[in-house]
Length: 272
Image: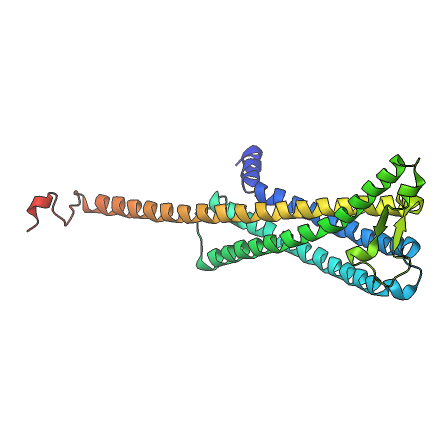
């Protein structure tokens, strides 16, 4: 075997669909976890500086943010390992499907393992859909805040109406109702929207939302690819059984030296 044939054989065993899904999952998780972790830190700083004066008003929010940051650490570790396992499963199924390493063989353990990966990936895609929807909430909050700041900038000639435009963090459950001040109005709100903390936090939440969407796309793509590959392997299994039957029939025919006759009557009218 020449160098070219060897390279083509190796490239033929690469699971390109699984490789693309793994890269999408890695990039999505890295974007979601990295930007989400930093966005939560910036949110705590933003609330502390502009929406609350007493530590007791946002201490619960600080604990919740810390809890979600630990969850992000766990998600990053879990998906890193799971994507590696899925890529290994893709290499196994592709080599079996394309018969790269010899004759096709599929054991019952391998089929059960592939089916388990399909079910688990589908369940993760459904659960991650909830994470994707949840990550849209801070983007919605900052979008409304940005729209209010834009309205304030347009209405700079009427100070009376500007003071009526506010963003209340208590309405979104970020602070208790007895928090002081709990909201920002008028030019104070416009000043908050121009700070580095606000712009950075807004951009990070958008990036985390995009990362959650990329991860969801990767999980759906991976589950569909595993399902299609499993069906293809079953079809190859049936074709392999038929081929073995044809080979056995040809061997028996050559050894007998005569034509094999069917034990059943050729004409249905002969059946009594």
